Image (cartoon, rainbow, N blue to C red; front, top):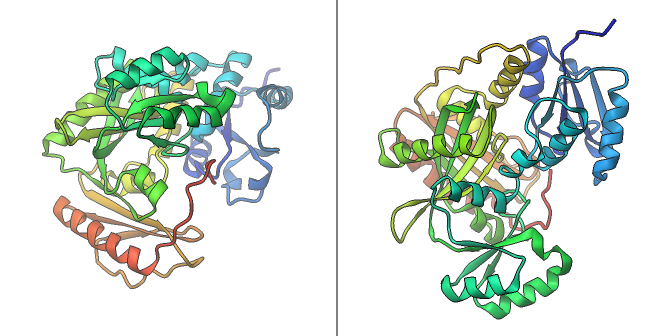
Length: 401
Protein backbone atom coordinates (compact mmCIF):
# COMPACT_ATOMS: atom_id res chain seq x y z
CA UNK A 1 0.00 0.00 0.00
CA UNK A 2 1.38 3.43 -0.97
CA UNK A 3 1.98 5.83 1.91
CA UNK A 4 -0.44 8.76 1.48
CA UNK A 5 1.53 11.10 3.75
CA UNK A 6 2.04 14.53 2.14
CA UNK A 7 5.72 15.41 1.94
CA UNK A 8 7.82 18.33 0.69
CA UNK A 9 11.53 18.17 -0.07
CA UNK A 10 13.04 21.59 0.73
CA UNK A 11 16.52 22.40 -0.60
CA UNK A 12 18.58 25.11 1.13
CA UNK A 13 22.25 25.93 0.66
CA UNK A 14 21.92 28.75 3.20
CA UNK A 15 20.20 28.98 6.55
CA UNK A 16 16.74 30.37 5.87
CA UNK A 17 13.09 29.40 5.52
CA UNK A 18 12.44 28.19 9.05
CA UNK A 19 8.91 29.62 9.03
CA UNK A 20 8.19 27.85 5.73
CA UNK A 21 9.13 24.55 7.35
CA UNK A 22 7.06 25.27 10.45
CA UNK A 23 4.01 26.24 8.42
CA UNK A 24 4.20 23.03 6.39
CA UNK A 25 4.29 20.94 9.57
CA UNK A 26 1.42 22.89 11.11
CA UNK A 27 -0.68 22.12 8.03
CA UNK A 28 0.06 18.41 8.23
CA UNK A 29 2.76 18.24 5.55
CA UNK A 30 6.05 16.58 6.48
CA UNK A 31 9.06 18.54 5.21
CA UNK A 32 12.46 16.98 4.65
CA UNK A 33 15.38 19.39 4.46
CA UNK A 34 18.30 18.83 2.09
CA UNK A 35 21.13 21.18 3.01
CA UNK A 36 24.92 21.34 3.07
CA UNK A 37 27.14 19.64 5.63
CA UNK A 38 28.26 22.86 7.33
CA UNK A 39 24.62 23.67 8.20
CA UNK A 40 23.91 20.30 9.81
CA UNK A 41 23.84 21.88 13.29
CA UNK A 42 22.23 25.20 12.33
CA UNK A 43 19.11 26.20 14.29
CA UNK A 44 16.59 24.51 12.01
CA UNK A 45 13.11 23.84 13.45
CA UNK A 46 13.84 20.17 13.99
CA UNK A 47 10.47 19.57 15.60
CA UNK A 48 8.88 20.42 12.23
CA UNK A 49 11.17 18.25 10.09
CA UNK A 50 10.80 14.61 9.21
CA UNK A 51 14.50 14.43 8.41
CA UNK A 52 17.58 16.55 7.70
CA UNK A 53 19.89 15.24 5.00
CA UNK A 54 23.20 16.99 4.33
CA UNK A 55 25.59 16.86 1.41
CA UNK A 56 28.96 18.37 0.53
CA UNK A 57 28.92 21.79 -1.15
CA UNK A 58 29.29 22.23 -4.91
CA UNK A 59 27.92 18.83 -5.90
CA UNK A 60 27.18 18.36 -9.58
CA UNK A 61 23.57 18.19 -10.68
CA UNK A 62 24.05 14.48 -11.40
CA UNK A 63 25.17 13.91 -7.81
CA UNK A 64 22.21 15.88 -6.47
CA UNK A 65 19.80 13.91 -8.66
CA UNK A 66 21.34 10.66 -7.42
CA UNK A 67 21.01 11.82 -3.81
CA UNK A 68 17.37 12.83 -4.13
CA UNK A 69 16.47 9.73 -6.16
CA UNK A 70 17.98 7.56 -3.43
CA UNK A 71 15.96 9.44 -0.79
CA UNK A 72 12.80 8.94 -2.85
CA UNK A 73 13.13 5.16 -2.74
CA UNK A 74 11.68 5.14 0.75
CA UNK A 75 9.23 8.06 0.60
CA UNK A 76 7.17 9.96 -1.94
CA UNK A 77 7.80 13.70 -2.31
CA UNK A 78 4.84 15.75 -3.54
CA UNK A 79 6.67 19.05 -4.05
CA UNK A 80 10.27 20.22 -4.40
CA UNK A 81 10.93 23.68 -2.95
CA UNK A 82 14.11 25.77 -3.25
CA UNK A 83 14.33 27.92 -0.14
CA UNK A 84 17.28 29.90 -1.49
CA UNK A 85 17.83 31.50 -4.89
CA UNK A 86 21.01 29.51 -5.50
CA UNK A 87 19.02 26.26 -5.29
CA UNK A 88 16.35 27.30 -7.79
CA UNK A 89 17.98 25.67 -10.82
CA UNK A 90 18.75 22.45 -9.01
CA UNK A 91 15.18 22.22 -7.69
CA UNK A 92 13.85 22.73 -11.22
CA UNK A 93 16.05 19.97 -12.58
CA UNK A 94 15.00 17.62 -9.78
CA UNK A 95 11.33 18.34 -10.54
CA UNK A 96 11.82 17.57 -14.20
CA UNK A 97 13.79 14.41 -13.47
CA UNK A 98 11.15 13.14 -11.04
CA UNK A 99 8.21 14.63 -13.02
CA UNK A 100 6.91 16.53 -10.02
CA UNK A 101 4.69 19.55 -10.60
CA UNK A 102 6.20 23.00 -10.31
CA UNK A 103 8.46 25.41 -12.16
CA UNK A 104 10.71 23.70 -14.69
CA UNK A 105 14.15 24.62 -15.96
CA UNK A 106 13.02 27.01 -18.70
CA UNK A 107 10.51 28.83 -16.49
CA UNK A 108 12.94 29.12 -13.58
CA UNK A 109 15.49 30.84 -15.85
CA UNK A 110 13.27 33.93 -15.96
CA UNK A 111 13.73 34.23 -12.19
CA UNK A 112 17.40 33.26 -12.04
CA UNK A 113 19.19 34.25 -15.25
CA UNK A 114 19.50 38.04 -15.51
CA UNK A 115 19.73 37.86 -19.30
CA UNK A 116 16.60 35.72 -19.62
CA UNK A 117 14.59 37.89 -17.24
CA UNK A 118 15.59 41.06 -19.13
CA UNK A 119 14.51 39.58 -22.44
CA UNK A 120 11.25 38.42 -20.86
CA UNK A 121 10.54 41.81 -19.30
CA UNK A 122 11.37 43.65 -22.52
CA UNK A 123 9.13 41.30 -24.53
CA UNK A 124 6.33 42.16 -22.09
CA UNK A 125 6.67 45.86 -22.85
CA UNK A 126 8.49 46.80 -19.65
CA UNK A 127 11.34 49.31 -19.71
CA UNK A 128 14.77 47.77 -19.17
CA UNK A 129 18.18 49.51 -19.22
CA UNK A 130 19.79 48.84 -22.60
CA UNK A 131 21.65 45.53 -22.42
CA UNK A 132 23.66 43.13 -24.54
CA UNK A 133 24.58 39.49 -24.08
CA UNK A 134 28.30 38.78 -23.75
CA UNK A 135 28.65 36.36 -26.61
CA UNK A 136 29.35 37.87 -30.02
CA UNK A 137 32.10 40.50 -30.09
CA UNK A 138 30.59 42.38 -33.03
CA UNK A 139 27.36 42.74 -31.04
CA UNK A 140 29.36 44.12 -28.12
CA UNK A 141 31.23 46.61 -30.31
CA UNK A 142 27.97 47.84 -31.84
CA UNK A 143 26.40 48.09 -28.38
CA UNK A 144 29.25 50.21 -27.02
CA UNK A 145 29.13 52.47 -30.08
CA UNK A 146 25.46 53.27 -29.59
CA UNK A 147 24.92 53.06 -25.82
CA UNK A 148 26.73 55.71 -23.74
CA UNK A 149 29.09 54.56 -20.99
CA UNK A 150 29.36 53.69 -18.20
CA UNK A 151 28.16 50.12 -18.44
CA UNK A 152 27.80 47.31 -15.92
CA UNK A 153 29.27 43.88 -16.55
CA UNK A 154 26.92 41.63 -14.59
CA UNK A 155 26.99 37.91 -13.78
CA UNK A 156 23.83 36.33 -15.11
CA UNK A 157 23.24 34.02 -12.16
CA UNK A 158 24.49 35.72 -9.01
CA UNK A 159 22.23 37.36 -6.43
CA UNK A 160 22.17 40.99 -5.35
CA UNK A 161 25.21 42.99 -6.52
CA UNK A 162 27.76 40.18 -6.33
CA UNK A 163 30.35 40.18 -9.07
CA UNK A 164 29.22 43.37 -10.86
CA UNK A 165 31.95 45.45 -12.49
CA UNK A 166 31.66 49.06 -13.68
CA UNK A 167 33.02 49.51 -17.21
CA UNK A 168 33.91 53.02 -18.44
CA UNK A 169 35.47 52.41 -21.84
CA UNK A 170 35.77 49.54 -24.37
CA UNK A 171 39.34 48.57 -23.59
CA UNK A 172 38.35 47.98 -19.97
CA UNK A 173 35.70 45.51 -21.16
CA UNK A 174 38.12 43.55 -23.35
CA UNK A 175 40.57 43.21 -20.48
CA UNK A 176 37.76 42.04 -18.18
CA UNK A 177 36.67 39.45 -20.73
CA UNK A 178 40.25 38.23 -21.01
CA UNK A 179 40.21 37.69 -17.24
CA UNK A 180 36.90 35.81 -17.42
CA UNK A 181 38.01 33.51 -20.22
CA UNK A 182 35.45 30.79 -20.90
CA UNK A 183 33.19 32.19 -18.18
CA UNK A 184 32.46 35.42 -20.07
CA UNK A 185 29.26 34.14 -21.72
CA UNK A 186 27.81 33.86 -18.22
CA UNK A 187 27.77 37.66 -18.04
CA UNK A 188 25.79 40.47 -19.68
CA UNK A 189 26.44 44.14 -20.37
CA UNK A 190 23.92 46.73 -19.20
CA UNK A 191 23.84 50.51 -19.29
CA UNK A 192 24.33 52.09 -15.89
CA UNK A 193 21.21 54.13 -15.10
CA UNK A 194 21.58 56.43 -12.07
CA UNK A 195 18.44 56.51 -9.99
CA UNK A 196 16.57 55.47 -6.86
CA UNK A 197 16.18 51.73 -6.29
CA UNK A 198 12.92 50.16 -5.14
CA UNK A 199 11.89 46.62 -4.34
CA UNK A 200 8.46 45.05 -4.58
CA UNK A 201 7.80 41.88 -2.59
CA UNK A 202 4.74 39.98 -3.69
CA UNK A 203 2.66 36.82 -3.54
CA UNK A 204 1.52 35.20 -6.78
CA UNK A 205 -1.44 32.80 -6.86
CA UNK A 206 -2.71 31.16 -10.04
CA UNK A 207 -0.84 33.62 -12.21
CA UNK A 208 -2.04 36.76 -10.41
CA UNK A 209 -0.28 39.01 -7.92
CA UNK A 210 -2.56 38.90 -4.87
CA UNK A 211 -0.32 40.82 -2.45
CA UNK A 212 2.44 43.37 -2.98
CA UNK A 213 4.30 45.87 -0.85
CA UNK A 214 6.74 48.52 -2.10
CA UNK A 215 9.93 49.65 -0.36
CA UNK A 216 12.71 52.02 -1.32
CA UNK A 217 16.37 51.43 -0.58
CA UNK A 218 18.50 54.20 0.92
CA UNK A 219 21.85 53.70 -0.80
CA UNK A 220 21.61 51.36 -3.81
CA UNK A 221 22.54 47.79 -2.77
CA UNK A 222 25.37 47.75 -5.34
CA UNK A 223 26.92 50.80 -3.69
CA UNK A 224 26.64 49.25 -0.21
CA UNK A 225 28.08 45.95 -1.47
CA UNK A 226 31.08 47.49 -3.22
CA UNK A 227 31.76 50.68 -1.28
CA UNK A 228 30.48 49.76 2.16
CA UNK A 229 28.00 51.65 4.25
CA UNK A 230 24.72 51.15 6.05
CA UNK A 231 21.92 49.30 4.27
CA UNK A 232 18.46 50.81 4.71
CA UNK A 233 15.05 50.28 3.16
CA UNK A 234 11.63 51.66 4.03
CA UNK A 235 8.01 51.31 3.00
CA UNK A 236 6.87 53.72 0.28
CA UNK A 237 3.88 55.98 0.96
CA UNK A 238 0.84 54.01 -0.19
CA UNK A 239 -0.78 57.19 -1.51
CA UNK A 240 2.19 58.10 -3.70
CA UNK A 241 2.49 57.70 -7.45
CA UNK A 242 5.59 55.53 -6.85
CA UNK A 243 3.47 52.98 -4.97
CA UNK A 244 0.73 52.97 -7.61
CA UNK A 245 3.12 52.77 -10.56
CA UNK A 246 5.28 50.02 -9.10
CA UNK A 247 2.43 47.80 -7.92
CA UNK A 248 0.89 48.04 -11.40
CA UNK A 249 4.21 47.31 -13.09
CA UNK A 250 4.95 44.38 -10.81
CA UNK A 251 1.45 42.95 -11.25
CA UNK A 252 2.13 42.78 -14.98
CA UNK A 253 5.69 41.52 -14.78
CA UNK A 254 5.60 38.59 -12.37
CA UNK A 255 2.91 36.56 -14.17
CA UNK A 256 4.24 37.47 -17.63
CA UNK A 257 7.49 35.68 -16.78
CA UNK A 258 5.58 32.47 -16.16
CA UNK A 259 5.10 32.14 -12.40
CA UNK A 260 1.90 30.35 -11.48
CA UNK A 261 2.24 30.55 -7.72
CA UNK A 262 4.84 31.53 -5.16
CA UNK A 263 6.61 34.63 -3.86
CA UNK A 264 8.76 37.17 -5.69
CA UNK A 265 11.30 39.83 -4.84
CA UNK A 266 11.56 42.33 -7.69
CA UNK A 267 13.84 45.37 -8.00
CA UNK A 268 13.24 48.48 -10.09
CA UNK A 269 15.08 51.75 -10.65
CA UNK A 270 13.48 55.18 -10.99
CA UNK A 271 15.88 56.92 -13.34
CA UNK A 272 17.07 60.38 -12.38
CA UNK A 273 17.19 61.35 -16.07
CA UNK A 274 13.56 60.78 -17.02
CA UNK A 275 11.71 59.77 -13.82
CA UNK A 276 10.55 56.48 -15.35
CA UNK A 277 10.78 53.03 -13.78
CA UNK A 278 13.11 50.45 -15.30
CA UNK A 279 13.21 46.78 -14.44
CA UNK A 280 16.38 45.52 -12.74
CA UNK A 281 15.74 41.94 -11.64
CA UNK A 282 13.25 39.58 -10.07
CA UNK A 283 13.69 36.42 -8.00
CA UNK A 284 11.31 33.61 -7.09
CA UNK A 285 12.11 33.79 -3.41
CA UNK A 286 11.65 35.76 -0.22
CA UNK A 287 13.94 38.81 -0.09
CA UNK A 288 17.12 38.56 1.97
CA UNK A 289 18.73 41.06 4.37
CA UNK A 290 15.82 40.72 6.82
CA UNK A 291 13.35 41.98 4.20
CA UNK A 292 10.86 39.29 5.24
CA UNK A 293 10.89 40.75 8.78
CA UNK A 294 10.46 44.23 7.32
CA UNK A 295 7.46 43.16 5.24
CA UNK A 296 5.88 41.49 8.25
CA UNK A 297 6.40 44.61 10.37
CA UNK A 298 4.71 46.81 7.75
CA UNK A 299 1.89 44.48 6.73
CA UNK A 300 1.56 41.66 9.24
CA UNK A 301 2.17 39.21 6.37
CA UNK A 302 4.81 36.52 6.85
CA UNK A 303 5.96 35.73 3.31
CA UNK A 304 7.58 32.43 4.28
CA UNK A 305 4.37 31.13 5.82
CA UNK A 306 2.21 32.37 2.94
CA UNK A 307 4.53 30.66 0.46
CA UNK A 308 4.04 27.40 2.34
CA UNK A 309 0.28 27.93 2.41
CA UNK A 310 0.23 28.44 -1.37
CA UNK A 311 2.21 25.24 -1.99
CA UNK A 312 -0.01 23.19 0.30
CA UNK A 313 -3.19 24.63 -1.21
CA UNK A 314 -1.92 23.73 -4.69
CA UNK A 315 -1.08 20.19 -3.58
CA UNK A 316 -4.56 19.72 -2.13
CA UNK A 317 -6.24 21.47 -5.08
CA UNK A 318 -7.70 24.05 -2.72
CA UNK A 319 -8.12 27.79 -3.28
CA UNK A 320 -5.47 29.96 -1.65
CA UNK A 321 -6.96 32.88 0.26
CA UNK A 322 -4.44 35.71 0.67
CA UNK A 323 -4.19 37.52 4.01
CA UNK A 324 -5.64 40.97 4.63
CA UNK A 325 -2.57 43.16 5.14
CA UNK A 326 -2.09 45.89 7.69
CA UNK A 327 -1.21 49.32 6.35
CA UNK A 328 1.63 50.38 8.64
CA UNK A 329 5.04 51.59 7.46
CA UNK A 330 8.37 50.06 8.40
CA UNK A 331 12.05 50.66 7.81
CA UNK A 332 15.19 48.67 8.47
CA UNK A 333 18.78 49.69 9.21
CA UNK A 334 21.54 47.10 8.88
CA UNK A 335 25.31 47.09 8.68
CA UNK A 336 28.37 44.95 9.11
CA UNK A 337 29.66 45.57 12.64
CA UNK A 338 33.15 45.75 14.07
CA UNK A 339 32.18 43.71 17.14
CA UNK A 340 30.68 40.24 17.20
CA UNK A 341 27.58 41.24 19.17
CA UNK A 342 26.98 44.98 18.81
CA UNK A 343 24.79 46.58 21.45
CA UNK A 344 21.88 48.54 19.94
CA UNK A 345 20.16 49.23 23.27
CA UNK A 346 21.14 52.89 22.98
CA UNK A 347 18.55 53.21 20.22
CA UNK A 348 15.32 53.47 22.14
CA UNK A 349 12.64 55.02 19.94
CA UNK A 350 9.23 53.51 20.73
CA UNK A 351 8.87 52.69 17.02
CA UNK A 352 11.58 50.00 17.23
CA UNK A 353 9.88 46.61 16.83
CA UNK A 354 12.75 44.27 16.02
CA UNK A 355 16.47 44.02 16.80
CA UNK A 356 18.39 41.74 14.47
CA UNK A 357 20.57 39.02 15.90
CA UNK A 358 23.35 38.09 13.50
CA UNK A 359 27.05 37.64 14.14
CA UNK A 360 29.03 40.82 13.37
CA UNK A 361 25.91 42.70 12.23
CA UNK A 362 23.93 45.53 13.77
CA UNK A 363 20.34 46.00 12.71
CA UNK A 364 16.87 47.02 13.73
CA UNK A 365 13.41 47.60 12.28
CA UNK A 366 11.09 50.50 13.07
CA UNK A 367 7.35 50.77 12.46
CA UNK A 368 4.91 53.67 12.42
CA UNK A 369 1.62 54.71 10.84
CA UNK A 370 3.46 57.75 9.46
CA UNK A 371 5.84 57.12 6.51
CA UNK A 372 7.64 60.38 7.21
CA UNK A 373 8.50 59.23 10.73
CA UNK A 374 9.89 55.96 9.36
CA UNK A 375 12.04 57.85 6.87
CA UNK A 376 13.30 60.19 9.58
CA UNK A 377 14.30 57.31 11.88
CA UNK A 378 16.00 55.24 9.19
CA UNK A 379 18.04 58.20 7.98
CA UNK A 380 19.04 59.27 11.50
CA UNK A 381 19.88 55.74 12.59
CA UNK A 382 21.88 55.05 9.43
CA UNK A 383 24.17 57.96 10.26
CA UNK A 384 24.52 56.81 13.85
CA UNK A 385 25.13 53.18 12.85
CA UNK A 386 27.94 54.37 10.58
CA UNK A 387 29.52 56.22 13.48
CA UNK A 388 29.10 53.53 16.15
CA UNK A 389 29.24 50.15 14.46
CA UNK A 390 30.22 50.16 10.81
CA UNK A 391 32.93 47.81 9.63
CA UNK A 392 33.98 47.35 6.04
CA UNK A 393 35.41 44.52 4.00
CA UNK A 394 35.82 43.82 0.27
CA UNK A 395 32.72 42.59 -1.53
CA UNK A 396 32.79 38.77 -1.61
CA UNK A 397 33.29 36.94 -4.90
CA UNK A 398 30.68 34.42 -3.83
CA UNK A 399 27.64 34.70 -1.54
CA UNK A 400 28.08 34.04 2.15
CA UNK A 401 25.59 32.28 4.38
